[in-house]
Length: 76
Image (cartoon, rainbow, N blue to C red; front, side, top):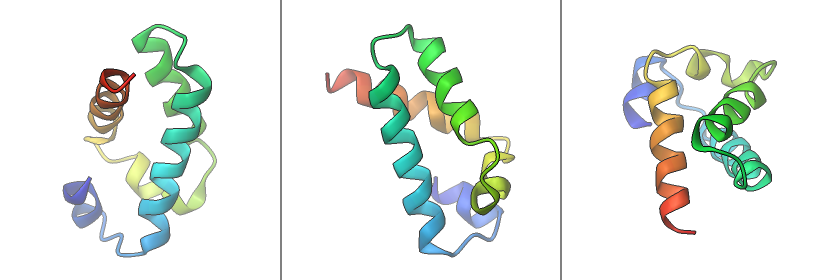
């Protein structure tokens, strides 16, 4: 996450907070689904959020989602 924030020059704390909030909410709503479906649902949830647009377009963002979902599933 820090690398993506640095690459996109996002130093607004709201970006990190919003990113985490979206992911946590949509993980919780979709955790009963298959891994790839959870990741896809989370990715779609970021669409149309101007504050997060630069971060979402970063080439590492899909990897970030997958790693966070793996982490959250391991805690279940």
